[in-house]
Amino acid sequence: MRKIKDTNQVYHSHDSISASGLKIIYQKSMYHYLNQKSFNSSAMNFGSAVHSFLLEPDNKDIIVLPQDINLRLKVDREKRDSIIEKNKNKTLITYDENKALQHIIDNVHSHNLASKLLLDINEIEYSYYGKIDDIDVRVRPDGLKRNRYILDIKTCQDASPQAFKSSIYKYAYHLQACFYSEALGYDPSEFRFIAIENKYPYDVAVYSLSEDLIEKGKLAWRIAFDSYKNYKEKNIVSGFNWDTLNNDGSLIV
Image (cartoon, rainbow, N blue to C red):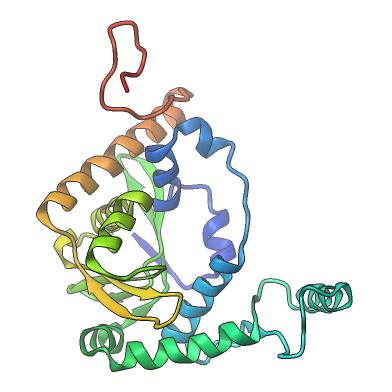
C-alpha cells in the first residue's frame, strides 16, 4: 500500500473503492453505489469536529458560529451562509456544539483506555492506496499504532454495548474493520473503536470485534468487493445483496 498525507477531499475523489463504497454495495446494491449523491449534515459536521479535536487539536479547519446567531432568523441564516462561503472546505459548528466538544474531550481524556489508545498512535489520518485482486482500493484509518492496532472514532447516540453492537450491524462497521485490516495487513481482532456519545452526558467506550463479527465482517466486505470487481472487469451492475434466492431469481424475504 502507498501511504500519503493528503486531504479528505483528495482521498474521497480518488478513483478506487473504499470501505464507505463497499458498505453501500453490501447494504444496498452496486446500482446504489453508482448513483449515490454527496450530502452533508450537522451530525456529520459534528462528527468531523470530534475527529479533529481529538486527533489534531491544532487543526485550524474548525469554524465556530458566534453565540448570538439565531438560525431561526433569516438575517442570521444569511450571516451563517456568508461565513460558510468565506470558509469553504472547513467544518462549521455551532457555539453549543463547541461547548459539547469540550465536554467530550474531557471525557475521552478521563477514559483510561481511550486516552491511552489515542496517545500511543503514531500515524493520524494517512491515506493508503493499493490493490486487492488487481482492483484499486483505498483506506484512511483515523489512527494507527504500527504493527499493533488500527483505531477508529465513532460518534453515536448511545455508546452502551447493546446499542453499539446494533450500530455495528446498522452501519456495517464490521465490514470496515475487516476491509481495513485486510488492506493494511492487520489482524481484525486488533481493530479498536472509540465510541463517543454525541448527546449529554457524552459517555465514552472502547470496543473490539468478537470472532463472530469478524467472520461476518470478512464475508461482508468480500461480497461487496466481488460485486464491485464484476462491475470494473465485466461492467456487470449487480442488484441487491441477499442471502436467499428462489429458483427464478426472486429474493426470498
